[in-house]
Amino acid sequence: MFRSDQAQFEKELSPQGESRLFNKAMPRDVREKIVYPFTFTSIMALGALASTCQKTEADTAFLRLMTAAIGADPESYKLEDDGSYKQKDETRLAAIAILKRHPRLLFVKGIVTDHFGRKIFASPYQLFLGAGDVWALKQVHEEIISNIKDEKVRAEMQAEAQAQFEQQFPNCPFPFDPKMGEEVLYDDRNIAQIAQIKENLKKVAAVIAGDPCTNSVATLPETKAVVEELRELFAPKQDEVIRTGLHFPIAIMQEIYKTYAVIPAGARSSFFSREVIGAALDASTAVDGQCYKVGLSNLDFEKGPDRRDGLFCRHPKGIPQKLAPLKDKLGRTMFVDPSDGESCFQASNKPGYFDCFDKNGGPGACGGGAARGLLGHVVAMKTYVRAKTSYFQNLCARSEKRRRLDV
Figure 1: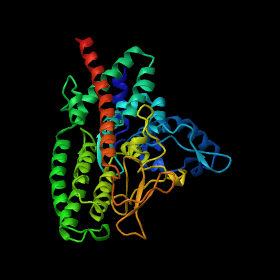
Figure 2 (figure 1 turned 60 degrees about the vertical axis):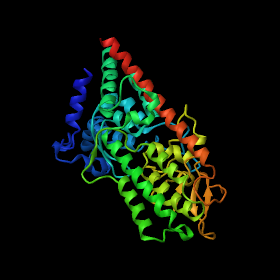
Figure 3 (figure 1 turned 120 degrees about the vertical axis):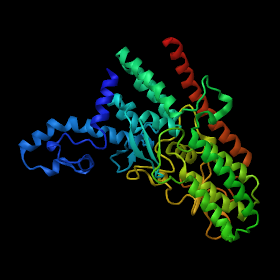
Figure 4 (figure 1 turned 180 degrees about the vertical axis):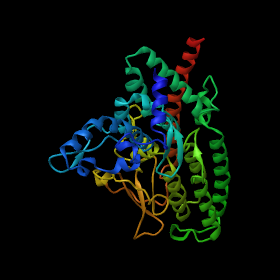
């Protein structure tokens, strides 16, 4: 039975669980980091290790799966003969590869911390839901659940997927109303956060209007304070563990661009681009970071984002320099234009302006703010939200069909 297997894995892989190796004396986190073959000197010991390798791989699979899922990690790069690292299929996810070997881990729950420091209690399936990673969800249904040969187990997994969707989005109405957009997926935390951000953005617009932002830098303490307040609204709350809703709604970016439209052009819009848009990008989910760095106007919605590239990469070793992550720069010295994916750094020889580069390191045009074409940003963001919401609508329609069959 699938559920009994799930319960077994949850018990074995709980944070309090003990290792099955070395008479349960070695903590799992230590076991993960030690390269076992180098700790043995005898053939007998190596033989004992060989007998436990399969169990060790299974025991650590859940830990690797959770970090890979929340980070939208690509499959590993392969070292070529010429010394370069390459990956033929840029859409392949490490989490999907793990799930193909351990499909019953799909619905096992645990706690994981994302790149922004948010602690999340969820299963890998719910991590994809909360991050809005619709491409990973599509792969899960088409390549994992649909390929389960045992019809009873497959039906149980489909039912569990429905149950975990409803747990993740407790306020989602049925039947699903696509006209509500992303809002149908919000939990109470999402609703409160967006309301607070809207109020803060009003204050941001007001203080920036009275601040010259000389050389794209805030000159009034009120401006610095209100932007810092916004950063606090993005930041993880102490002792908070996210269990439902979206990790970081795209509506936040939409609200920011509505505010950007009323910011005076020039140094003020440059300051807003770097400090506000950049800070929001820093708080975005890993999958959204992949889409933003590609550029929403360039994104193939059917194929999905380039998994090797993104604002946050958990595998910097082996990643070509042109695909390197931008962590620790966003919102401070630069931002990424979500529409076209250009990286915009403060110009060294022209204060208040940006030097823009595409993700391959090529130079772009210099501009004084984020939206060289605000309408294009609005359209791209709306299209992005619509594409994601459409997939969630299909998931809900599938759930509705199951309900009717169950009745």
